Length: 385
Image (cartoon, rainbow, N blue to C red; front, side, top):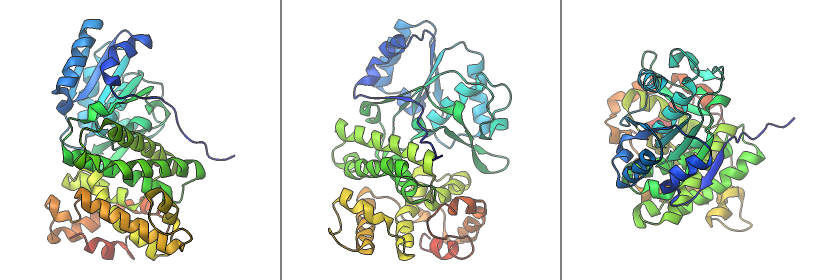
């Protein structure tokens, strides 16, 4: 039997839909909503207006402002979970970037699964369904809203390991570009780059399949034609909704096919050096495309018509390189960092960065051509110092 395509959520796409949140909650027959919201978005006029409506329509709405400066840890998740275990609610609404949505999914699940959050690391360790969740992303990036994964840092083991599985899916998703307008450029750009890395790596990794490829292609098309709006057309809600849609597809792609080297490199960097995850993967992603092409892998050529590059009837090698050139120019236009010293990681840390990547070989093995810690990693990494 073929591998199923995991999709498990009602998704709504509507600019202006966030302002109708109380109406949506009533229509779905919930009466005791609670909210976990990114602390930055919580300070916006848009959230303030909707919060007022929620308080007018429902009794004792609990609103928790999620700390969003760093990757969430299991210790922090435990604190937040305890806050919600003491509350009575029938729908948890998570609003924010990937960290806020991951936290909301985990808190909703742990409301009905007792004990320490860290005991649920891995896949399908949750025994019973949690409280239903609704996720509303305020950045177009991680795709957390569409996946059954939630990532947290184990501070003792210095590892980023998730709570994952079928009880982690959101019940509802709302994509509304208006919620992204308040996000500053750098985190918005990092999120968009993260989404594109999900699609690119999911498209070429060893577990890719025709169904995930279909979503990856459309995600790449939408993201590549809309990312420029973050710099040049910042109020364009239609383009921003395309970004949100591309990120939504990226989350499904990554969950169903996997990821690759660039994303894998970002995880230790986020744990040890606080490099934002999206940018962490973006630093390496385009060079990884070049690495694969030079090793003879040319599936990227299939993207050339979507990006209006290459030549009809041209060789796969040349069209794949045209896609690489397109991505390199896009990265330059977006001002994606290309050196680790942008995050205070100097040449003196080269050996340490190599050492913290030792856990990542299983993820590297998803790459379509061999990429190993011993044979390829040192030379590949040098160019980023």
